[in-house]
Image (cartoon, rainbow, N blue to C red; front, side, top):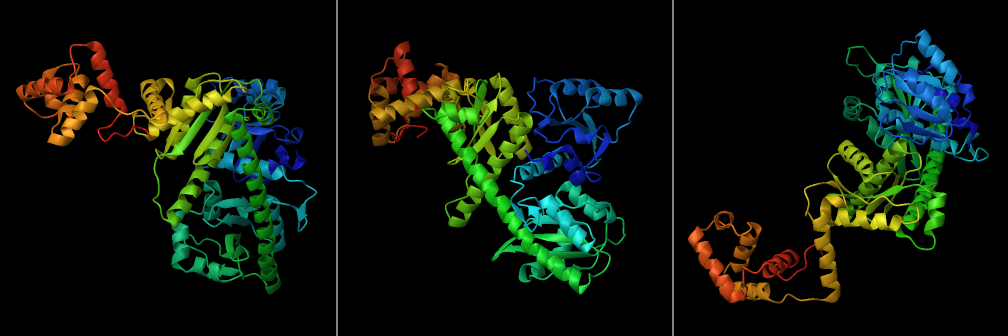
Length: 535
């Protein structure tokens, strides 16, 4: 891994705005091996030189000692931090640097920024664009800032911050808020839209000068200079500089030219991400399908010899059949899969996730289904109720196909609406899953409905009767006529007459437990229209 992903690089790019060094030597960690969220209730496996996010940690000293034994590089806890003599001694003894997360910054935003930095460090340092390692947007932001002597941000099409330069303390409160939130606040984007700023950016390749907006406290923000980043006709994003006055003609030209270089880096970063995504999808797909290549795929994912659980995740809704809706659905599926990958790698560094067809599959190292269920539920709660997640059984790396089959079955049950959960294990939907598997067998054999239930369905169709409904209500109520008649809104005497009639028409002995069981099973597996449920 490139030295540029070391702790010093992290502090150089994210320091003062997001995180501060409280104590420790950042130079000791020349290569961050991964980002891990600390879970006090789990025996976590840390990658070498891990950067640990101590979410909710109030007393870091005991944790520092444990992380020192694991070879962690740094621990981040929420600031402000009071550096006591005891805490200083714990840092020095462990060799783990202590960092403070700025008040107001979110852990999710920090994890995303760290992931972006580490991904940039994977780029071959010998491959450069304009003298900057290809895809390294943070280094490029610093280069542009030095070029025009002003702090800059590089943003995507949705005004989300992709990278930012140093010297952000020279800007204003709105810039700090933008970086802490990783996105330009809505009130500022609305004000810019009202001024027609974005329309100017879309239409022009030249920098656009914007007078300072009014901040919430009544003060005037610094003016901004913005330029669109394009690749051909595609609008990729923009660069924003906080300036005190219009730049000179030469500086403005240099700022505009920088957008062309930023476009090359953004395209290189996107291409690299696409290649990595496809490779990971292939490995995950091969691992969960089983077969000759599964063992090698599991090894390449770093999961050999580990107990794992397969998760199967799908959207709980669709967007219609028109092309635009279909494109939005594909994009949403990929975003959900990427978000799942980020969430799981923060829990365990070797977790892997990829979108395969319309389902996002994840392989999560876990010793129990309960833990996998908690993690999946936490992810669902973070992004809302827009997804369904099936949790497979615990398997070793060589039998992941069994765990995948279980996760698929659970997902089918959830999609069919046959369970009230949106996240479930195989044991949670055992009976519903069994009925679906029986339905599969019936469909495969081409079986047709016969016996009493078939005769009742035929009678109902011919005479517009409701004997099948009567039988179903009686069976569901365990023979309680009062409850069954209330369920179908008829008088108990009328219901008793229908029971006698269905016994005659269907030629079924309702006192026979085997006959009752067969009828109940047929009613579950066949709809009156003859269709097999769940297909």
